[in-house]
Length: 327
Image (cartoon, rainbow, N blue to C red):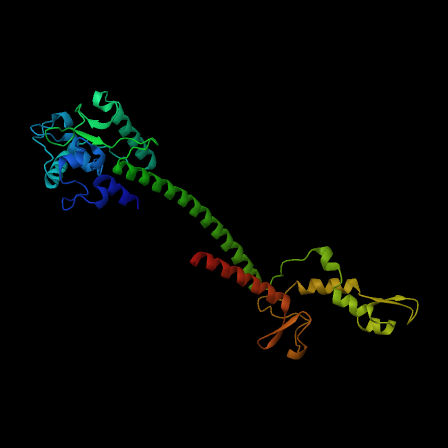
């Protein structure tokens, strides 16, 4: 996009050096250079066309433009203007090692606006005229060596098409810099996410413990276990179910969950059994119909559901990374 705008600066809407249309070089000198009234003219259509207008004059020899005799240059037609441009271009000073960037483009625009206004000739006091002639008549022929642009409106924006294209190219370069910075930040975030996902995945397939519970929370008996114990009314039934009897005899007292046993079970569930990991003692060997209460049937055996949950979580994170990278 920036290159397209650069070509538009040089050659107008066609974006190419040609005489086959009137984009780089309008058909007549008066149209290209502004004539006596730039309102209906196309001065500023291209930088190439303006260069010819600045150096073209019937009977001239080009000294005023280049400081060197380049023969007679006159803007008589589009083809003649193209030939004149190709003759003049090698005589323009070149800035070696300079690459296009927003700062250099802004400096060039500012320099042009300054030159447009500081010549000091009477005709330029209230008009946008660039060149050596003190005249409000620019046609690349008898009244040559100048470009007569449209007046600047109240908003202060100089109405020159190639200058507007140059400013647009500046903005595109700045946008590209901003986008490159944002893309770099996104890339860093994706790399960090990838590392996190990979760590979680490796943790899961190696059978390491799931993300740990808070120790205070882990020590509390589960609601279902406490409810089961509370329903038991005799010491015998209470102790047979692994609960703790608090009372004076077999029937006088309450049955409560044994917190020491709950803690042990919680810690055991978080330990895992290795990469083949698939089972713990509480699940191992159970038939499919009995595979419940913290266990889950997978394939041909009963496995610890806490391990499976951790593994599925890791895989979901990995999947999220691929979505980020691919879409």
